[in-house]
Image (tube, rainbow, N blue to C red; front, side, top):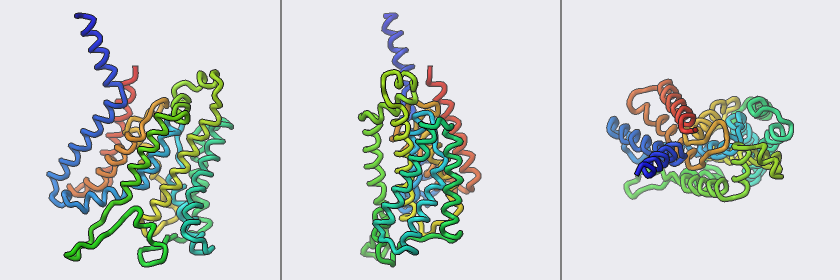
Length: 335
């Protein structure tokens, strides 16, 4: 009898320390927070508000999925925010000034992200430069490059009235009802969920994911077992760069103008969402689905707090408290 009680207690402790518990807790917080905003503001209950939340989280979600991988290795990537703006601006420049077709600009934008991820990965994995320093330098480089190439001018991708504007419908589809009302359809959420499912499978069921997790939980042991740690550490940053390029396309397809000098802070929302979702800053564990939930929570706060009369400063305060709580939970649930 005593052994059974001990086993049950150990099972409860193990469950509380698991990523599953943190994700379930996050889902409960999301449900309660959404119910609170709905009860506090009738305007928040409208379908258009929900569509707005979805349409404005695409680029942050892509950044969060990407940065989950280097965080799991014990690193990070601070260049994502300014990189997103830089790649979007260069894609606009290629179309407007160089006459590139839309598909070419999209491909170039994604590849620029992957190239910067390769540079970051080489510096961190091969040259042993601390991730904070390496990606801080990349952040400054991207911010300067985007502004220099465009001469400080804003960039634009095809709008809804121009040829090639169909790519915007990949993310935001608007249909007209019989009454003449325009109804936004957050079509991009379909692709976001699909990418999250794919990257969850990559992280949990492929050699790439196993080695990336292994780097964060036991780099030296992995190296002694004959695994090329440098290669797989670089791949984590390449994945992050690739998703930054995809986020740049999503940003260009969602917003009308891309302004040089913006983007600083985007990476903090993405990193914060990944941590809130259960990815450990010390490395060794993480969840793409958790990052998805973390982005949803941050987006819900960004949109919901103004409906109850609180400005952006309150949003930062509440998000910061949630992030500190998530880090505290992460530390407490580890033995």
